[in-house]
Image (spheres, rainbow, N blue to C red):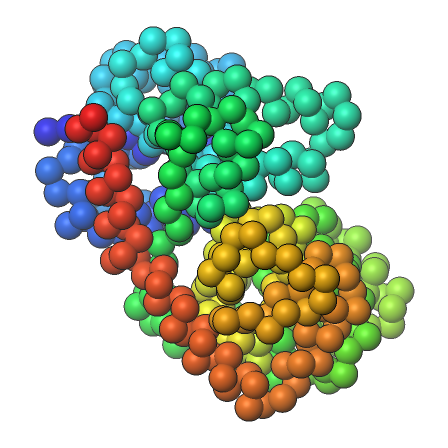
Length: 377
């Protein structure tokens, strides 16, 4: 029986962790494999890992060096046939040890548009230093899976990943589970009518830009923002400065966001970068019309089925509304466009149909077939 280890920094609330848990939620897809989950850090679980999966925690404390050392010892003791890693630190450790001579095959799962992410996090010398580990070592993995075509092409163009080793598989979504959870009571108080945006309260989500675009629109329903993060106090002050405390509501964190999503008029995001925007697809699953910035990467692939898509104005896409990055007037125009009830009905149907393309039964099967191919080669 082939042994597969899924490696990730920890199980937090991010999209990578959600995708991993979703992949493991269908045991029929990996019958005949001995599957384990290995966490680099000894931290509490924010998501449940299926009971039948063996879970091991190392104690790397967020350190890349300790992660490499601890992972090397684990691989020496357990000799898995394949290590599938998620998130940059895990990917670097996995690829480095493959270069170092570890016999376990290595597959990297890149969940973000790495160039854009590093551009947002660092500048100058720090930016160049931060890009060195993936640039130097990703290429030594047996394969890399980008969560969107934009992510995959970024790995090839900017991080020395050989084209023949780079593949794209979208995120899987458990549609039935989402729809069941959407029927539960809301954990937070919500207005009778509202529009919704979700995500960690960080600059990359561009909430200030979104708030200003919303306040300039004809929308009378409140804008509710669901999530927590380091920018919370800054956003509260930003809202107060605009005398908008009754129009823009920070709802905080909800363990189950789907009842809140399901009751909204439509979903809106002004993110500056994504890998593959999970919240966008989840909003589409529950039937929300959607507005999203055409950021790298994923939104155009989801809403227009096209990775390379450029428009200087609001674009009425196949499955939702795309707006150019950091153009407030165009985001405002998109909000005004969805004031029409008939348009929202049309895009609600489009959302549901498009979201079905990312159903877990389709995507998870693609993953397991791909991993089996890597093992066989």
